[in-house]
Image (tube, rainbow, N blue to C red; front, side, top):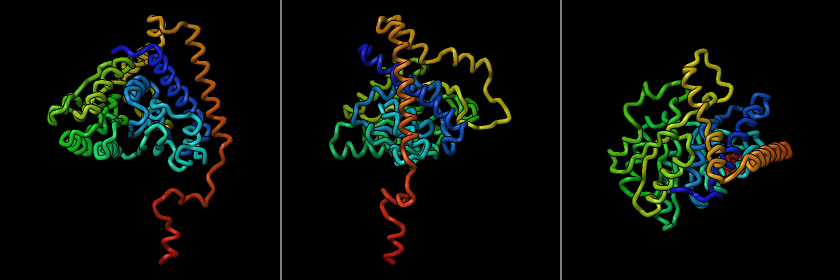
Length: 330
């Protein structure tokens, strides 16, 4: 399955957006401009974009950590995302979600959570709603290799398989759950676990190749959309930075040779060269694209800077119930 030249260029464009957005956000965090912490997708851009570009505009997604990468991969506007990280009123969640709990309904991003695996059933619920309402809509659940050992994943897969729900379970296997190597806590291939539920299990061994991820994701999405139920897709990838920015560990748990191997497989550099080799773009076009995305990041920061902080009185807006109104009613 070879996508069109326009789609391939958009893949590179979105991977660049994720890389430059996360690099800028990491710098802003270290300068004290972003509260809390952030989890970057640097190194995992091909896995994110390859999966997201297999989805249609109305399809839904839910993730956990690295939660700005997913909506960017689906096409989110960068300004409101950056404003959300800073906690500004112009953010996608009005500054109330921050990096770890943002959602962008404009692109079907249902939100992320700091609780490992907790967004998996949210994606299944979205798939159930599509089935009940008769809507031509698929949902995709992103989770890491750490979450693959949470029971909620298998409860969710079982229900989705039994009811043939239009959902794709995508494991972002970056080899580490924070600092725990997956090889020390995970038996066998995660994708092989699909056999127990009678659904396809697919392993993408080179998750740094955006086209290979895209092909696997398209097959799973098409199956779900056709009413044939879920698939489990495991993508082998790698994060170049720590699990979370500012995480201070006393031991370097990753081997230097291992890190060097994966850095040499930088998905942006690999696909940049492939676009040139295929004749889709030349060096000048790539340089122009990179400058264009750098400008978009600058504009996103300007948007965030210009946005005000939320007013105190807005704290209980967009809740189902205002606690002060409840107190008054009593």
